Image (cartoon, rainbow, N blue to C red; front, side, top):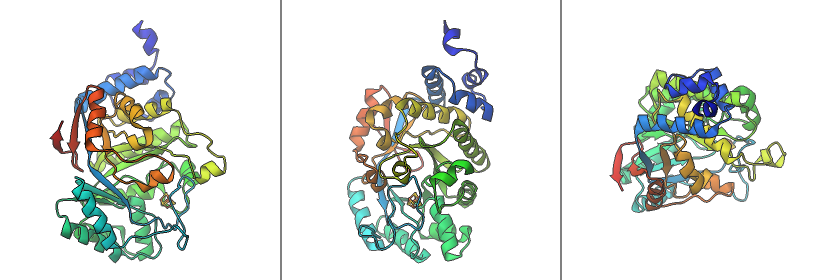
Length: 365
Ligand code: SF4
């Protein structure tokens, strides 16, 4: 009976044994037909690595500008400089918002934005200095590797120089955005004016080498094929072996509304929940020996599906995401309290815990 359920998959056998999975194994599992079994094995891997605790942070998400020199086909957020609804916050405005977030209990700020063609490096330094001066205990998780790469080109400073100066100004860690999918065949069709996959990886490697840890993401559910997903996960795994600098991997479901991919009818529907669960399970299994945390971004999934994803290999809910303009631009609800996230976790008989940016536990529920 069990053999009938499992079928004859060598890759599945290797996943059960906890072995490192090859590219071909990954492809086989992307096409493996028994999703329940795949999710169950991913869940066992999760339990072995991190137990039953489900973590989340109290995060404040802020976008300092929506002005962007790029015009990615997968993005609903960017505006051109001078557009009616374009905005750029001053460092002082950013600090005022951060002060409110800290009063709400945030332990970290997650700050990202468009590629603003006129903001100098001093703007970013001022932003970090004013936050650190007034909120020394708050962790600053800011600027994706893609933004750092753009800033390097714009200001003609090396990536190392930019990262070093931002670290001196107060940068603690970096978000994982801008990774999208590394494979050039897909990347060139979903982003326009953003660094290549290899440039993203080179930039984040330099950050890790300077002691700046980061998250990493994978944007899926648009025009990719299984091989692009597996390629992306293997590239993450290889860099993690080198630097150990990734804190968590966050699969990001493509949000369709208001994007060029939707308007050009290149993608007509968001991917299915079944596909979401396969991606979470595969992420867990491909990274099982090298990265403990697989995050379920509940903002994109909704709370009910997020609960299921936590039973398919996920171990973290990212955070409260007070204010999150990017997903809101594509029509998704975005806020939740720490208590609501804890309740979600209790409902699936797991152990909720608030964490900090580096996954140290702050509070159990
Ligand atoms: S995804 Fe980022 S880089 Fe691309 S258009 Fe949107 S804000 Fe700009």
